[in-house]
Structure formats: C-alpha cells, structure tokens
Image 1 (spheres, chains in turn blue, purple):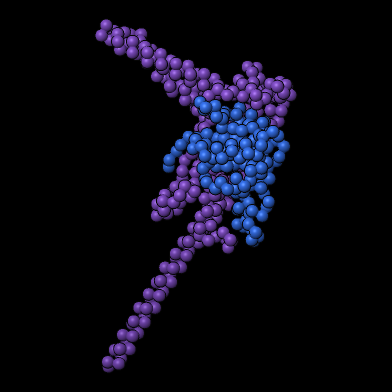
Image 2 (cartoon, each protein chain N blue to C red):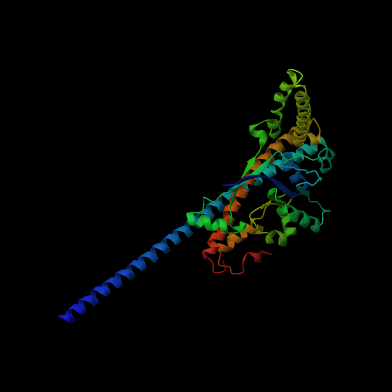
Length: 124
Length: 248
C-alpha cells in the first residue's frame, strides 16, 4: 500500500472557504498560487472552470471540495472528469442546500438500480 | 462373444463421456457460483459504502451549518470588515492539515485479480484518505522535527576544543546559523498556520468554535472521499461483470 501526503482544494462561497482555511487547509506556494477559490457574484464561469482544471491537473491535490451550486455552473466539466484522484466532493453551501439528485456519483448508482433507460444524464 | 465385448466397450465409453460431461457441468456451475458470489460481494460493498456516504453527508451538513452559524455570529460581534477575504494571508505557507492517500489493493479478492489490477490504468484503483494533522500528535508539527537538530549544533559550538577544531567550529557555527534561519522560517511558517491570527489577536470565541466545527467537517470529508472511492470502484467492477442494468 503506497501512502502519499497531499493537499485539499476548495472552490466555494466566502464563508465555506473561510471555515476550511481556519481548519488549516490553506496553502500558498512561492508563486502565490493558492489552493482555494472564493466564488461570488462577480466570479465568471470561465474563472471557475480554469480553477477547477488547474486543481485537477495538480499532483499535490488529493481532494477537491466544490460547492454544489458552483459545480452546477461547470457541470459538464465536473462530469467529464472521471479519474479517482483527485476526488471531487460536492458539498452544500450556505444559501444552497445539498441536493443528492444532482450529485453525479449518486445519480449513477441510482440509475443502476432503476429501470429508467434514459441514464443519469437525464436529470438536466 | 466379440459382439458382446464391443457392446461392453461402447457402454464403458458412454459412461466415461457422461462422467466427463458431468464434471464439466459441475465445474462450470462452480465457476458461475463463485462469480455470482463475487458479484454479490461487490454489490454489498457498494451498498455499504452508499450507506456510509449518506450518513457522512448528514453529519457534514450538520457540522458545516454549525460552522456557518458561528462565522455569522463572529461577524456580527466583530464587524463585517474584520472577517473578510481581504484579510487572508497571501504569504507563502504550507497547509497544516494534509491528507494521506493510500492505494488499497487488498480489497480485491483473489491474488490473480490483484496482478491484473496493477496492470490496469489508474482509473481502476481504489484509494483511502486520512487526515494528517501534524499538530494533533506533535504540537510543533513538522517544524519541531527540524528544530530538534538545533540543540546538538549549539552544543558543538559551546565546546570548541583546540585550534585544530576551530575551523570545524566555525563551520558548525555557520551551519547552526543556517539551521537557526531555517527554524526561524519554520516558526514564522507555523505562526502563519494559525489562520485565526489573520483576523486579529483577540478574535471572537465564535470564530474558535467555527474553527473546531470545520475541523470536524474535514474529518467527515475525508471519510466521504474514501466511501466515494469505494463506490466508484465497486460500480466499475459491477459494470465490467455485466451487472444489473443492460445499459451498464
């Protein structure tokens, strides 16, 4: 069993990111690159998408926490990513509670036990 | 007599054929039973992991909502400008909480399958995640491990014996200075680790409670990631063995 140490990355609203940074997951490298992105009204979808792609490309990140409403904004990119590492976890945010039907993993498993032939992508 | 012998030979041949067929059918039924048992085990693993995932989701939602509530209370008592993203430190610092990632191969049932799995691509691997917080076991964290070296070098500096060793002691002094600088850097880094300091020296107790809530949430997140990895792996294995749904 090979063991490695890695970071967590967060994409979410200000309070969620603040909380996780208080818990000690914040990392700033020498090039001032952070492992978090605060999403507010002014953040564009392109910025979120680029941050997500950057975090998934980094080898020192093992888990990416992304607020579900932010994941919905870049759902195509999130669903396209099917590697086990980094693990993508959709978490609730302050204003948007967690909806299990929108989670790609749960939707896949639900499809497995259902007789609906339309597949998990039919939820959109 | 010869006809009787031929008939006896034919009879014994038929019996052998029949016994061969019976052996092959029993072997195939054994194989199918083993396969079914394997699929059942995979399905049970998937369902167990799903159950764990859903319970973790509940506890994550609880600890997160408590954390948000405490942050809101802290913002109310300290003022909105005192808890703001503009106060986040952008100085280079390493995270104090890391995640240890380990690949689990022993969960795959038979040994031959393990070898196959190693040859397969990374998307077929299962991972276990665990929190790796250096401050939990060792209050000084990783930095204390470095600063443990410092007293030895200082001792060497205190006991210079003879002129022949003077050059060595000078070198040791330089080394100790370097180590000292390292430890200073480490100390400044560890100071940067306490993210509460970003919001001032006297912070609201609500912010400390929020910190502990989010630490709890982190532990749940790590469990969630492990369950999710188990689900993905079990899902793929069921998919490969032609599981429940024809579309799989």
